[in-house]
Image (cartoon, rainbow, N blue to C red):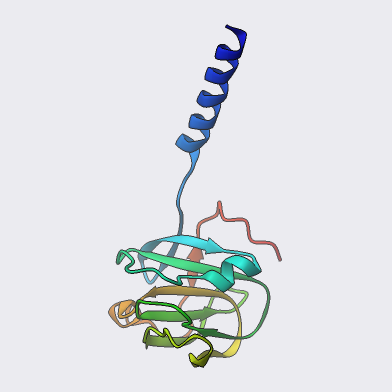
Length: 149
């Protein structure tokens, strides 16, 4: 009986953790996107590989440890993307719009930031044009996202 009660308690504890789970978000030009976070090397390397689709109000936010020139590529990425680069103050410093999918493995071309960046936001292709983004636009990040400096 004691084991059953303990099992039930543990199940409820796990379920309560699920209830409190929340999606992270960013806001850009007044539009909010729910984002997956890529904060370590393994997550950044995997990125949006092998995704068949992504909802229009979704994206992925890559957080780097320091601000530096960056280059992203579309290896095994199946959907076209806008790749937006932001500096440490979360200002847009470079854009790569309508980047095509690439399944050529290591032959996929890199898409550079052209300026030091710390944050990279990947959205469905066409979102940057829809928002009429210009360099200098500010990215607002969910305050619950832990970003170390």
